[in-house]
Amino acid sequence: MSRRTARRTAGPRPRPRPAPALQADSPCPCGLDARYAACCGRFHSGQAAAPTAELLMRSRYSAFVVRDAPYLLRTWAPATRPRSVDFDPDMRWTGLEILGTSDGTLFHTTGTVTFVARYTHRGDPGELREHSRFERSGGAWVYVAGTFTDG
Ligand SMILES: [Zn+2]
Image 1: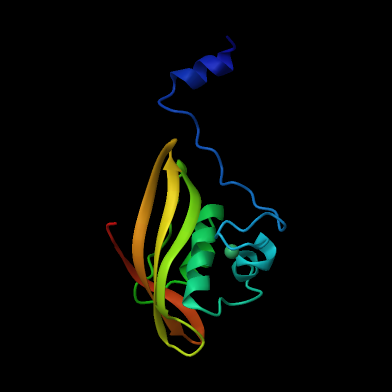
Image 2 (image 1 turned 60 degrees about the vertical axis):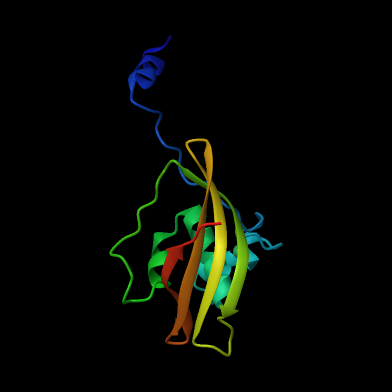
């Protein structure tokens, strides 16, 4: 056994792996049938702004996948925006399902999205169900707050 291996097994747990890298032509993690660059990637890069609350929600989920903290912060309503976003390095987001939406289109100033986001945490599967509220701020959709829901 090499010294390196011995030291690693002596530690409390393995080093967390970095966020999965997404290529421009990777399937978008948000669940839509599109390439990352043509879907959430164009919102993350600032090329475009999400036109609906649902697309903003999807792009924020994808931002958690790629750990894009600046995007999460700039799409957070100023009144509820945290100082920073911390990512749990042991968390792997595995899928997003939109369960329902209300308003949140080009014709509205507020909207809601209910979704389930699935993940594994150190290999254990779990899911997060949330009812999120969005509003339009300066023409762009931002996340206001969410409440966890059961079932
Ligand atoms: Zn997407």
